[in-house]
Image 1 (cartoon, rainbow, N blue to C red):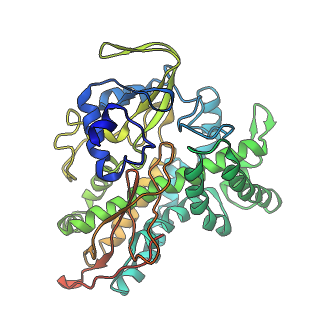
Image 2: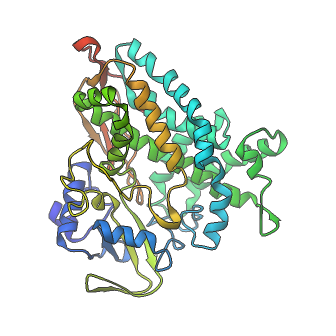
Image 3: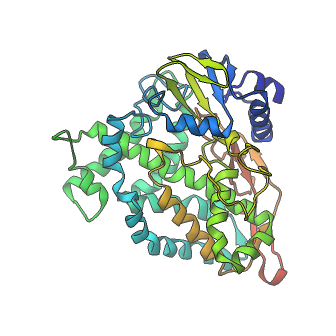
Amino acid sequence: MTERLAEDFDHLDPAFTPDVALRVHRSIRERGRVVRSSAHGGFWILSHYQDVRNALRDHETFSSASGVFFPRAAGTPLFAPLEYDPPRQTVFRDLMKPPFLLPQARRLAPRLRRLAADLIPPIVAEGGGDLVARLAVPLPLAVVSLAVGFTTAAQHRIRDLTSNTWTHIGRDDNPGQFWPQFTRLFQGEILRARRQPGPDYLSDLVNATIDGRPVTDKELHVMLVAFAIAGHETSMNTLSHLLWQLAGEPALQDRLRADPALMPVAVEEALRLWSPVDHGSRFTTRPVTVDGTVIPAGARVVLLTGAANRDPEAFPDPDRFRLDRRPNRHPTFGTGVHFCLGAHLARMEFAAVLGELARHPAFRLAGPIHRYTATPSATRRRTPSPPPHRRTSSPPSPRSARTSAISSRPNGATRPTTCSAT
């Protein structure tokens, strides 16, 4: 199975499960710096760290304007600003960056700590629970809503609409099963911000201008959907994996509790080891030569970030979670003009969780890890899809969800507790 997928890689192949994903990435990386696949009309693959990093930085050669996510339902709008090239990308990025700039993220940091302090102690008081359903899902949704200015009603719908989008975008002939649902939700948010403006970013955004004209509702839709999806799902995936990693290695928790200065290191290592989006794509605007292979102009190129993050030439002992990995220049947040808008806020969010967890007894896995498979998406991780009546919790992993029950461990005692998954 690994050999077949490595020879002709297809990220939508049902066989590309978490059990084989890391092996496939490794095999592709070992085949060479440039690999070709015939899937979906054919594309090239870059999997080595330096090649992926170079492509991410060279937006003039590796364009995003033909869509980063593929295949996609015909007519699906491009997501701003990731799927735009400069100068259009620059215009939209400038509109979208204010709530995520470092000074604003620092102003939000106390509220992030309060959110973590509201969510974690009740789980501890109950002796354990589902840290994904009760922490890794609701916290990122609350944070992005706080930063942008989404209402509570919108916040509660974003997760389901995101899952629905990834279910359909790579398989359907048109976006009718997912895009209208999102635009209806955010049209309501736009109208609220116009009619009842508040001291939030969204109330400013709806009155913004582009080249001297008012921003259109369609332009607002692509920005708000991008905020909603990227602003919560990537953080949910990373946080779930970080919690899973710590639950499986209580000694790591002890080190973080004893030395809080290691918490940022743990965050970066989770981002590297468990890339929340393990690949994206670009389109070449001109021929480019990599290691003697010419990739022609007009070619789709998949950048395997997950493979690059475990490239032994860049990261010694790449498959281990190490608190001494400094520096840690992973490309998880991208680089160049498309560097992640929310990187500062995400790091502060994860730090808030680690800081709050350090105030409580160590926790551990209270049950086995299961993997569930959902409908594949274009380039994202699969979403949690537990079977009926199964009581689990579910940290997402590449191409699916790992599930585990997590309990607190006061003074060495354990009380396994499992809760319903999301």
